[in-house]
Image (cartoon, rainbow, N blue to C red; front, side, top):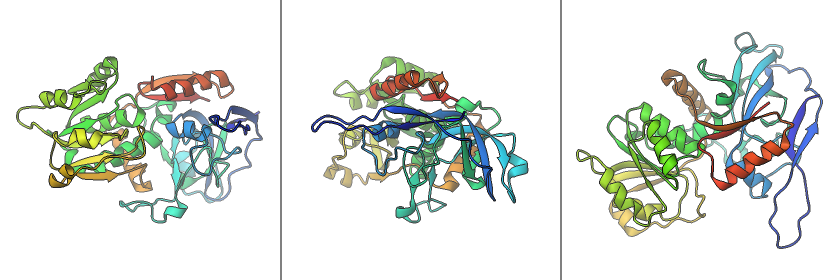
Length: 358
């Protein structure tokens, strides 16, 4: 019997934090795919911080019916009538596009009201990676690059397209050989993929982390060096690591927020870019006059367009990049093991993506 992993509604006492429990549900196998659709047998799905926020009731439009996880990789087992891609895709592994409603505009979704992610939310409650089978429109998948496994494929979608847009769209001038890029909070899925993309284009990458071990692993992936953000004057330490021929940063890719702008002002070149894809330390960031005087640009970014998603997958294939998987567990029905992945994610212990093999 196919399964789906959702959240279960639970009343909480006033003043207590909400954290919806996981619920494994037996579900029927989907009906045969309709015109232009594909039936995908999910092989692996990956967690994101949004799944934690969904369980905490901190994400918009959450659903108790929709399977969790926006990221998944699976095998196309059947194509609907009139499918233009059926012959190409049946029997192949594909990655699911993790969002809907953003076609090509580099500035942002064409209609913000129609933009949404999949997994754990409405209105498309049949979509989500944490299930045995899913039916999708044939335009909403990309073939998995041949050098990757299904587990690695599940690690790609949301973090990967976010990283691609944050670096290669929003900070494109820095995504060049010899340019200096700082990636904060190394160990998270987005930060690691930014590191890998930047190394692939020849940029010199520096990282921050709260762990010496994570910095060491980042160096193994191609980072030039790194500093501990737990040290009060880490930006001064980072300044000493910058090369003599280019003693400044061209761009900073950040998902934490906090006082990062204030710290980065002395490090960034005039006109340098801060590409911000998240603010885990708080929803407000300081923007002092020194940043204005130095012509620093702060650019918000999240996920990407359908065009950027394809460009990202093609980039991974071209450069033979393997996304970093921190750990995987086997079985959608192993709810206790999946719960452990959530705890690992909340504690920030992972180095790479956390994946469920289905």
